[in-house]
Image 1: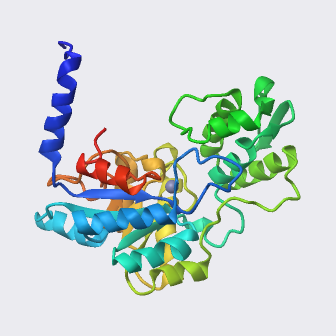
Image 2: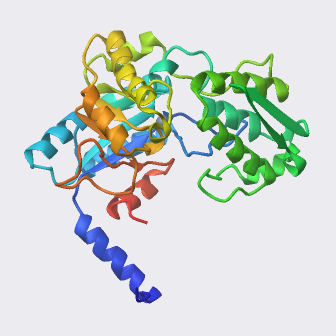
Length: 348
Ligand SMILES: [Zn+2]
């Protein structure tokens, strides 16, 4: 392939933007909350402050045609995608989706879909990735070695320089994101543990987190990380019809790496569990970490979902598979930055 001169790159970006201008966008949020007072950082960029979320909604209302995921899926099926359409979604099912996000969605009359992890509903502790960040990414010293024994396997880590994280380093790395190179040995350890835990079955992850808290000296302390919705909060979130509940598997398992039986249990099981709580059909799904393959798409179709979301910085097009709807992650951008990115169709 002939290399493209660097001087042509801005022109290419311009043409890509122009081609995609006005195609519908699906935005992905997770938590609506302030992280300023929290001891650890937000390595997955999952928190947007309520003030900034309100700015995003105000801009979307003025600049785009806001519609629900259900409406977008219907327009996709009918071949009538709306010009400048935008859909708001949330992953995981945090309690703040009810307490902080829903009042703002109501104020701005913006519909949204919340994809909840079924087994996390009502759990008093936070999601495992938040708990891990709370243990690992706050400043201080940790024991020099770590051994986790679970499911008949033992994994060991020698911390070396990762045993120490200074307050200055923790503060300087607050804006670090997990998809960037780790800036300190402690951040590298965090990523190593995150990858290891991600592949464990849920019961083993919970055991390992208990062990990690005890190892870090947090055994007696209550979890400080944001918690999932309770069953009662889930029902309240869906009340009024502005917020639709979707499924995000039973345990947030990476579907492409599961056997057929387990995969179907994660997909169909989460649908049945949420429907039992809500008393109505759950029609939308999102793949944990956006990870999907032909088998997981087939499993989602077989379970009876009408549409499903992945991740990926692109738009919904005429021929987009309704079971692979791309979404763009919204970060904690202020109104000016959000508007700038929106005007560039979120293409860097
Ligand atoms: Zn998720």
